[in-house]
Image (cartoon, rainbow, N blue to C red; front, side, top):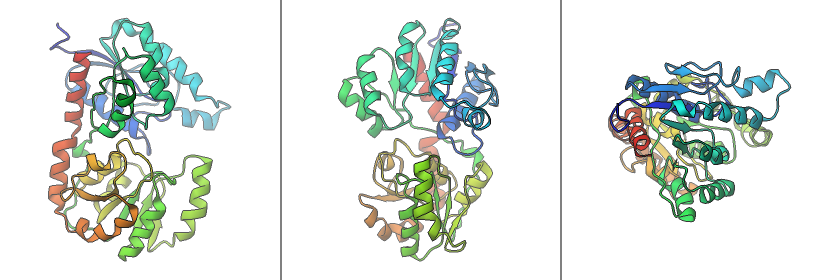
Length: 350
């Protein structure tokens, strides 16, 4: 059957830090989970080159025993690249059996795609570093895609190549919305300077509302930030901290919140938590950096401000938004079915 219209043989290569799907934190791993499941549902033959503790309806090719974070915690292993290199080698060794290989593991391994005839697509899930942009310029025949226009523009502008954009999707059926306004503000993300829980707390205090924080520090630098800036403000009442959350806990946090506060201080390439909040009917108040202005429809699913200091004045307007419309608008733009359809179109093009 022609690859132009029939089922495709697709290899999916995720990062190895977390299993598929992730237990708590893992935005890329969650996107891989949604993508893989919907591709299988559509009838494509999918092989997931993931960790042995992953759960998937696709054929699982275990490239290592378990996710690398847990493996490193229980052994003397300490170099991620050793496992990632082995995974790329295992994946490319199967290239002739596949119509396309979709890498989600980072740009560092893009040069190896030139060694096989099977087309490889690399999705850029992070802010494009100098190294990423150098690779894109020097290996222009390997297809790339971005997850937002602002992110793709970083590479397209320097390399002069086309960088199509496929926005991340959300399984809206996995979120039960709540259309009555909540009584607290929510923050969900890493406890880091870039994600900025400190200003989320300040905004809640200025608005006279309690805030619930979820997420965790992931590096020593973030742990130091959390202990110095955030922990002293946690009182269990006006400022609550619930740590990392699984899907059920995340849904409970977001659906019962009055709004999600997203005061980032870096060029966020997408921000999955924004559409997860919208899936719960919860509007978003963000700082207009990175993808925020692309994801949030101002006056419909939330608001954003060019400066963090200006966000506080928008709290009443965010709280007044129609929560039913928040979910409806988000679902019309960010369903996982739309995401997968666009990726399949991209597979056929390459």
